[in-house]
Image (cartoon, rainbow, N blue to C red; front, side, top):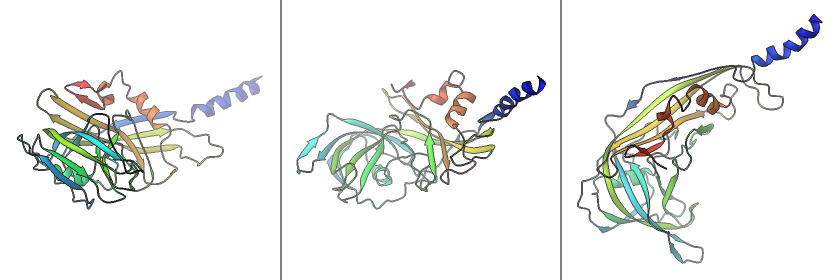
Length: 288
């Protein structure tokens, strides 16, 4: 009888140490970039043709710029088709820390961020891309989906439509097709870019019969980036945040986190930390 009881309890004891039996999340403080730098020049070959001058404030390094644009796409038969109404994009005009890694998010084409400097609010221009395989892109809300530019694996938490990156212009053989846009600078807001990191730890055995084995103790760095801006009414206070972002340098390393998003939601639930789940807010209200 005793042997039968032990035999029944043994699998339960083993399972108790499986998967993420123990887990934790620690977060560091936000670190603002107090002296933003000019974006690095990018030989995109982007073309800007003025339409009308602006009479408002000049765009400065580190401003959050609100753009309104109407995109025209050229079909394969050569006909041009104007988009259905104007769209908007928000662009931060500074140099992104460690931009070559892509782990802090996509802040749009550096050439566009550079070209906006010293232009005035109210200015209108045509934005074109004559280089056949290139595009000009801008985030819908300041920070777009991060891209694993150095390889490895990358994923993030957030609402995917908030982190969408928009195409404003593209060359003949660009992924999005040939296109150009009429752009207007709607606002330029004093802004601050901040970053922070955290660490997630998981302990427990992963039962994986056929996949890549994983270590019983797993640790990973989490990253966040955020833009805070003070805009004139009606926008008011603006905040865009991306994160947490989890990146590994290698594909499927043994110590990679296991269901890390579920761990984060468990350790930092929305009910107790609502601000960590607001990825875009304008005027103090989350973007619907």
